[in-house]
Picture 1 (cartoon, helix red, strand yellow):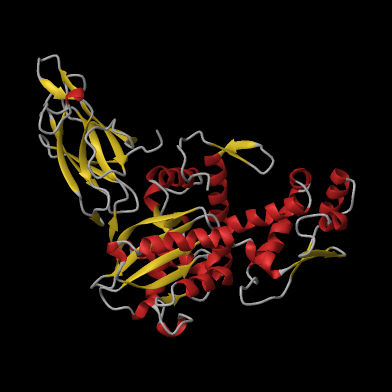
Picture 2: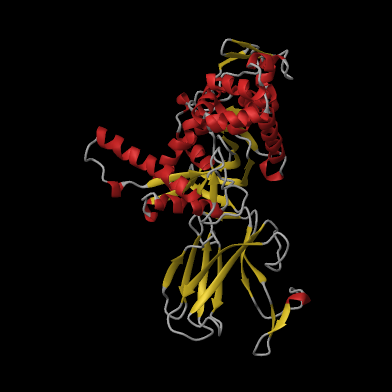
Length: 482
């Protein structure tokens, strides 16, 4: 979640629960390396010498709401973990889940209604509820049986960990902020074990049941309360805000159902409101079903809230919804072209200084170059507009750029993005630089031309550059981690 909604760079630091810092890329790389090596050990145990390491193509899944910098960060972490770049595909989690459920036989979907039964042109909303994020996209079934994105991915940090945060806040209300902080600092293993126990209970909490939630509390928590508050946990509970709805029996904490259900309120309310807003958009009015995937979708608090709120829509909740992304990622690795269209989240363009045109350029951007020619400084040369449908694997734009006297042997390109559909200058409010690249040119001299095709449809950027004089084609990766 640290990769979401913040300025990313290669030296980003992560803090652990106790405030110690380490390079984020190192943390991600070590996690990926562990999974990579574990797969290798298990596969060799089961089918020794049948698979070579260089034969494995890896698929790394990321939330659809992540930006290009976050995807690039994950790719570089995977490369640091020993995965070759050309043997790695980045997949968007809701798309992977959607592919899996499209391949799921009707009789195995766990529902009377399944994605496999949807006809061409049918529209459905994918709700990928994971631990950190909740990703929401709208898909349509194509004639070929593939999937195209109908509405750009959106969502927020309302996943299962938001419920965990509410539970931790509940512990603070029972005791004190200093107690929970000290418990976490001195007994991290016990703290993690407590969250694991809560994770099990979390899946059992049901809005239609009035049974109490009973959880055993680690001994270290009792000790911490005694040391910090100079009274036992039982007395602390009785004097807390929850004195009438929570009780302690031995090491068991008994929580009234209404209190347990309240842990889900912020997450469920935010998710439902966001889905309501999406379904009201003109382009989404044909949605006839909601596909719920991701581990948090298995929560009855979330799934039943959706059934009550959207009674006219068909609900699809596959068996083992938490594995839908994983299994779909395998399908995506074999058949990436089953996702045929995506929607651009932003308007993308390149900064340039064209000849000044008073009909389209603001006077404030006018300047005269060394040759005495009037030009427009920092013009936003659009390649793709926000909301535009992008065909996967096809160039969405084609522009010609030329070397300048100061860059005779290279063409330097700076890529900008904005949510606005009609930016004029790259300095307009909301515009930000998202990447840059330098294109080497054969020979020297100003005015040498290069044709630039930006291919946006894939999960990652591809820039194809053709030097017009020589016909030489090169693919350049945009660097989003500036």
